[in-house]
Length: 390
Image 1 (spheres, rainbow, N blue to C red):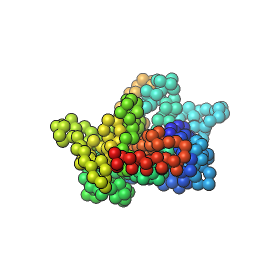
Image 2 (cartoon, rainbow, N blue to C red):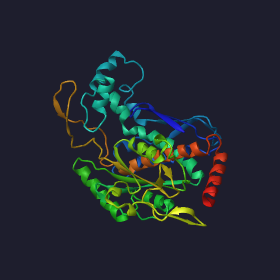
Image 3 (spheres, rainbow, N blue to C red):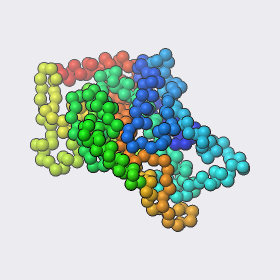
Image 4 (spheres, helix red, strand yellow):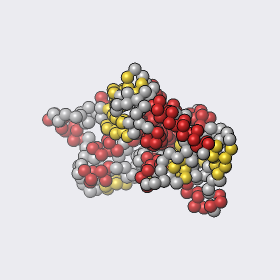
């Protein structure tokens, strides 16, 4: 499976094409819209979420509520484009519009954004060409693609959820029974944290950052239960699933770190407190007595829940702007202020969950088949039985 996204933050809309989804998977637009709504929620979000109500249109690859095996095309209209149709128009500019558009030219790069690097790379004197595409608005379509993957995984007995474990240095205790319990409790929290006491403190920290014109980041954790043993590979570096998941997380806007299992904590512990002892019983088959390695050994899943942490930096667009340099005049200035969030960690958690889901689904179909959903189901059940009896 693979997907490609297109679209700009204030352009006409956003598009993705997903290739490799097996035929006969039940899929309707509400499956995707539910995930898009989750992405737009969360404490600390800015005004843009009140303007856009993301709704997807499926334009190919699905017929009568089931996938056909053909590429799936999804599109989301940007409602705000009506206010940007001249500035972001596709056609050549009319002379009477040139002055207005020129006044919207962006020559002042914002620290922490792609503005200056992208402008130098593509020789754009108007950095709007960079920031419109580098905007986190693009993650709308990654969530759309991930929602299709989540539908596939769930139908195969693999459940994926996410929760926030840290915002601005405030850590929540992650106690939950299973992924279903995790999802229910995280979605009941404005900040997607299962620890109610920590949730309130996180909200206070977000309010304080907003009052100070600042922003804060945090850590999210994605958990996937039911992933069969052996998904991924120990044979080649580019087929190690934990590595692919880490790359997917790092591709999300503002994410600067990834941990598998206990992650960096492993550097401070002896091996006896890091590796997971192996056990076997008739009910579970092979399993681990602990899950410090986050469900991975040798680049492959080991049957334990997959646990991936993603670290998100504070959003760089601040209402207390940082210093930068105008590329036209070379004069210093205080960076411009765009619509922004004081904290996007709860929303980014949904993005992280969906990019992880897509990589898991890709690895699943790579191992068990691409063409027909029913045959993938049969292959996974055979594999699970063989693993129990091995």
